Length: 331
Image 1 (tube, rainbow, N blue to C red):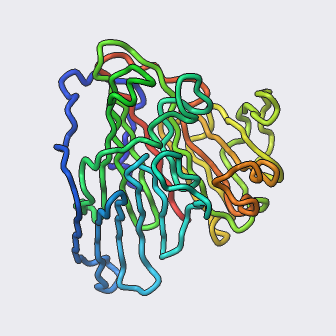
Image 2: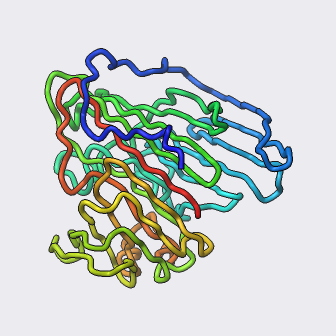
């Protein structure tokens, strides 16, 4: 697999001369891009579309085949991916009771957790990034490779400084390929003081039956079991499965996981860079009943496998950037 689009530098670096965003801010009300090119399979053409409709950005890579198409949709509030379709089949779980009012985080998709994972004494659960309005720095655009990218950004404001008094800039580059979705994250510190943070891509996958899901890449890792008051254990299974309420932080996991029996029984490959930890979560029946934005009977049809840097915080010196990446691939 080509990795040209990945951010693989795993250490903060000096950005004192590169603190401006690479693209000027634009106010976008609508955009539609159509392009046609050969896909090397007998001359069939593809159609690329990127659209912005109020607070949603939809990005498509469409084949002329009736059942072959690729797209994802981002809610600009929170930069939350709420849909990713491969061959016109949805890959992500979003609760039917999810709230889209911009005040509460969306229950499902891929929420962006920053600068705090978990409960936060000074601010909202899982931080403010997932409930804050982001900017569309670069509208959807086809790359020379034929892939489609869009770039979102978030920087400190009166609202964020009222909670967490630090200057910061987030860059979120999303790239759509056939059967793949690439996530490239940059956290910049333009201020005069260091700050620490935790970060996570809180991915909800659809599953026909969570009890049949299997996760590789966790063997031998220690994990913090939040269902047992933070007790620490070591994963001994070759593949991890779920049969009850699960809330675990696996520490220093492998760079690749394969999640079996998601969506319609397919496999999902997750590759991650500079996101050393993996969170596995499912609320199960009793917890689901206590969640107003989650249906009582929805827990069997989702599994959260989340790449992050959460077991210990990142310390980011002034004038440096933290970079991380994730690739999701249907296999």
